Image 1 (tube, rainbow, N blue to C red):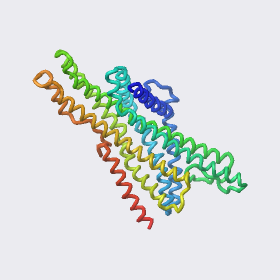
Image 2 (cartoon, rainbow, N blue to C red):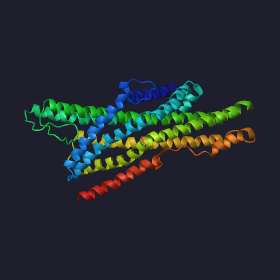
Image 3 (tube, rainbow, N blue to C red):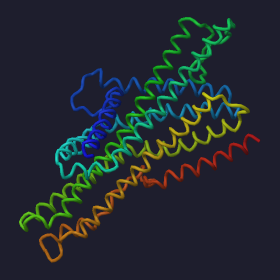
Image 4 (spheres, one colour):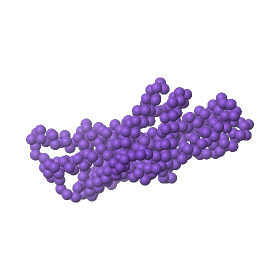
Length: 388
């Protein structure tokens, strides 16, 4: 059973590492110039795509259905830009976070007593990551394949195509009527932007849950050490407590780095996902009939936004819960009457649980997920009122 969990964690970490590496964002200490240029290429592609969709929104500003369609897609590209910028600005902190968590967790896996303990719920973290990857991949494949199917059908029925469709609703400042080289360039550009969207979205979101899981593993380790402190000789109790206090301080530093890097990302995601979910529901309500493929796209895209929101919210709650479990373990440990341990224990108990906040605005917990759903419903009724 333990071997299966180790395999699940290894797969989970390797998938995240590979996605981050392709995105040019995995925290390698020594990397070449080309690797360091990849994030800037990602930003350029997504910024260009966001501006093009903004042009579409401006052209159809009086049509609420088309505006909501364009905005829901544009926010995804803007989210990618914010994520990459946050990673680039805090690159040194990211390397520090990685060095504090990843190597230490790999060492813990070698301990047969602790490996089973620290790998609890690893399947849930892994499944959330895989579900996000599947939803993003399916959505992008649908967007890319749809115009190709349209063109193939028209050619098969020998129908003339007056305007070749592109992947996304776009408003370029020039006309694209040709089906030749110019059209192919624009189609290739939007395809590359889609690939950038896929790799950045899946990698950065999965990396957040990976680091949270590694922090939870360290909390479980020090909880185990403090709970079994009575099994050691009296001379070793001080060193065990000092180790736990030092490790908890490192985790507090890791929490600060996570808030610095992911705080703006989480705040943006929680706000925009409510808007995107609202626009998707509004688009569905405006359609008289929905094809099977388009219905699957809507379901997948809604599931994507809900999974993404839940990943961040649930990860924050899991970290806080495990931090509180550690404090309970410290309080229940065999330290009564030992004056040499009391000072360290009292300092530990006086610390607040490890809670993540998004730019000091809101605590990252499951309550945020519920808040996003409530906001979605409120925005949906507002849009319906405006449409009427």
